[in-house]
Image 1 (tube, chains in turn green, orange):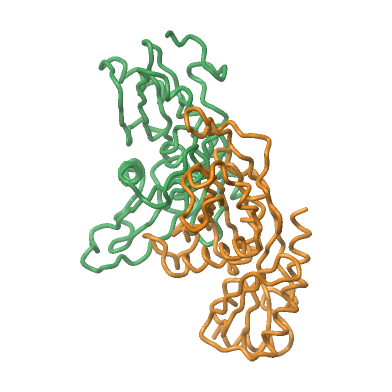
Image 2 (cartoon, chains in turn cyan, red; image 1 turned 135 degrees about the vertical axis):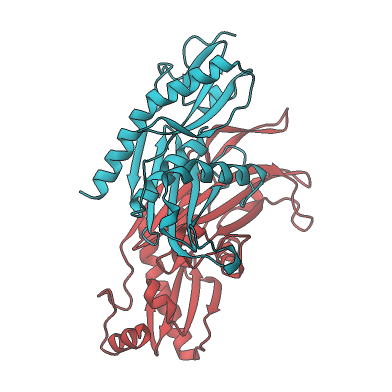
Length: 229
Length: 255
């Protein structure tokens, strides 16, 4: 099949409706919600706080730890609560997506924990999670070089498109490429791919994300301004 | 320090947030908060927030109840919701929360389990209730029991494709769960000889004892005594009376 018109009528470079909200978990030092259409992620930050066991402490710099989790009812077929191989990997790549914007030297021997929870899933959950986590870190007053904007790119029949929904993700031969960039510099901090693609296509995908990240960045900035108004 | 302060206020008939001893914090109930769940609800009780989702599936009945559906309740005290909660499989506090809520639903006969039977001895509907804490501001049990009931009331059966023996998720029937009773929990907390309800985080840290009472109408369907302190029989009597009155009010919020 040729995918000419998107199922939900979006343009190929148009994300689903985005929404950001900051300060949603009172107990946390920072927290936020980020939504791409029907995909809703929340994130909470605790720290910097002392890192234990002590041998993990580094006098040179602090540590960022990220935990990604989905609620059992966020997906159509119930997911068993708790971590699995998939969520462990996403936790790791989310951590790597966020760490470049932090100045970890500012809190030696300490740790910052970021917890991401998917409340409702319709593809692109790790990207929504990273957008929310980046907002939560800013809400926690962390010293940051930039925010992080993440969104998935899809490739099918030679056509590139931004922010796949579940229906699109399930198309045969769809290649899914979640990407995170630092919006001010365009530097890449998350890049994964599964599918079947040529080098030029990957570059095209990254360029598209760099363009779209400006819009994500605006939504994030608005959410932060709303909090500190 | 905090304990002395709280006790001092209680002696004067006051609480740290200015409420009466038998006064709930502001309660907000929302349903349909997670679209892929067959039913879901969010309850905000003061600073406490919990989300509950109901998922359904078709499976085999238990050997001792071959014409009845299966109910499984779980609770995740997310590390996201409090610095006191740790990562990892549910600990004793999470298990207690899930089990106390589960008993209220099960023992009251809230759900007509016989109506969840598709084919005796072979196929029945299974109901999975999962409680997730978003912010622990105290009194998670009452908030969770309320959210569970709101989520059950929000639940619609997914369509079951008998021929292919598959549940067609996302395609919800118009049929709601067969709910007969509406059990709710009220937890009474004892601090320095005084009885109060709906403690906030500061109060919860200094309680001597607590008693959760779950009632559907006139009958008590589940109880759980917690905390290191003890209760006298007169106190239990007083607590049950208060719980009955408060549960009636809580039920009114569901309408």
